Image (cartoon, rainbow, N blue to C red; front, top):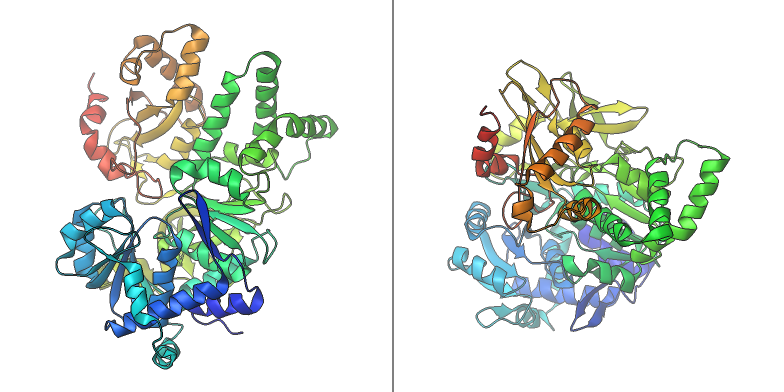
Length: 582
């Protein structure tokens, strides 16, 4: 059947796979499954309910919730009647809710839990709020659903027929590392072209594979992923929370999942921390295997001896890594920010295929994907262009994108739209290069800065290199218009504890340890060792150790775990200034 709107994926899945488990969530220790046909029935009834309560085409409805099937029900039901969803991060402030409600002219709000409800209620005014959980002061979503049961499908069919592939189906307000969020307008055609463009890059078997989903559906990365998984007939299981991912991986035994580099870094750090807890020969074997993995390159045959050792390491050590991920993972898709090449090497060596891609909310999101085979993967690149998408590199190195995936513009912001859409090309703000058909990202244009000596600093590759240290968890390079760069460093406190144990240094508290002269001296040596990878003007001259990690809730990270540089600069302005005082 022809696919021209995203909701066409519902009958397509029924005709192609008729899944017994299309989407699933865990409630009170049990998995609740929805089949393809149940999905269609619920979505149709919800569409009819929206029509009954007067929701018109192009009207905006907010969705603020953690991942759950109900999120998808509302999204697809709105699509079928030509209404526009406005997904929002549960973690943002009530002030941000109020801004988006007003700017998007939201008519109705759906929330996930009581915490979100309280924030939304503060910002909602007289807008009705429905909840996915039974809450004391909110209308339960199933009460709305009941309004649509037994209603005539004729009007729904007419509304569906009136929806065009070029129609806007969602406005996504970008998380924004600076300033107010912008509303990215995406059409059915934008995202559907992306779905069809990335489907061939998925290696798990069509119709029978399982997916664990935990990245936020309000981000286009996971949402386009959901539509792609529907198209391929994968059973989608929603993790209970970010804290239960490890347990859910073992339960579901997924064949694939989407993630961001920050989570892979955390997985790797936990693995290494467990390695440090081992004793004797087991500990020696672990780090012998780890060092083998860090040397791995899927494109280079390193000879009989290395291959034999790697085979042994896989049997003795790396097999346990795969078991921790459920034992059946065939593909991990990594996006939203740059992945450290060393992590890609060691995971590929361990038989865990991490495939980097590249894109932005404004490109629905995928521009490039990595094909998940040793012959086609290129560590350090973000893969090749997907079908019908073109890239050119501007004179200043900026990546420009053209294709059916490029947004219609920013909602109510024609000036900002004109800043990034020029002569048919979307200006990404990323700096990169093409290398034999593979795209490499070198930095964010807006994140690059000049020293007072006129030298350019690209902070992102530097930060990724410094984070290769087992003692460094997070790091920000600063120094615009200064005579040398400096760094704020959040230690890997697990790595620091292991170092202290090894050296016989008593570990007290994180806050006390980052002030100890001998610990600062250790970090000085660590920074000096990594500085050699950079030009003299790039090298970190001074740094400040911080006692607490940066997070989403505390405001230093976006929901996709990228650094909010402006926020960090403001919060730690005294610390940064102090590094320039002699």
